[in-house]
Length: 309
Image 1 (cartoon, rainbow, N blue to C red):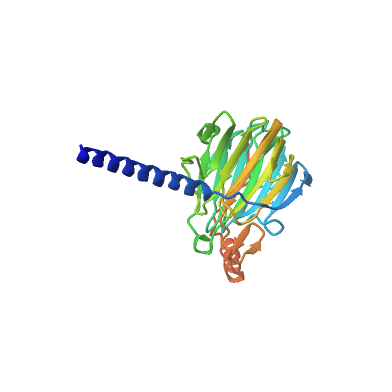
Image 2: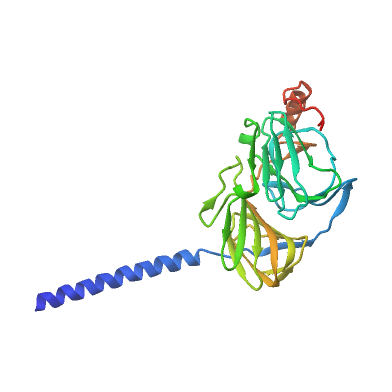
């Protein structure tokens, strides 16, 4: 009997230790989550950039968004730029699901594709290539984002390639609180099938009325309002509001008003390397830029003739 009681007590003690350790681990994992604070909030607006193109321009030389370099919400209803080169970066076009028309995308490596509403295309330019993007039907407005993502110095000259995802190929997570479209990266264990050399998280979030979402974030993180109204860290967020967060912390929390809130979330790790801008080219050093422009002049980035319907 004494031996049996001793065994029972030992098992109960062991169970208690295991439970305590599990509780401690769960508490530790939870306590490791720390909300980022707001570094700055800006109320932005559309401006006429060219005939046929209006945009809300967010640039890394003005706002702390690197490794993103350009993050522009655009409204475009006719061709604007024509064929042009890029090098040293990746260029992403994401058409919002509410866009009234598709984009045509062409590049010097032979790609010809349609970016449909809700679809996405990445030109990982690397050592250099040409592309051309414009509304499929002139006079009908397209709505989306043009996004430049910086490359680290070691990846400035990676082999150029294109990545494309139609609307139904962009992963979506649906819950009672939100819908998240994973434009690039990973969310709640679901990842995009494509991955750029610079790892960034880019989500299109639809937060339901009076609901809240917490999102894991890399050191650099920002949100950009699209529709409805939300709040974060005590600040109200409206459409075309940009909220930059501090580098400290590893998650952000957003709450929606009774009208819901639609926004873009972007996050990444800054390269913390020098940046040399040269029009459509981005390099680390002036010497790299001079060499890139020489290569372009010598026709080493391919060629793309103007589009003929």
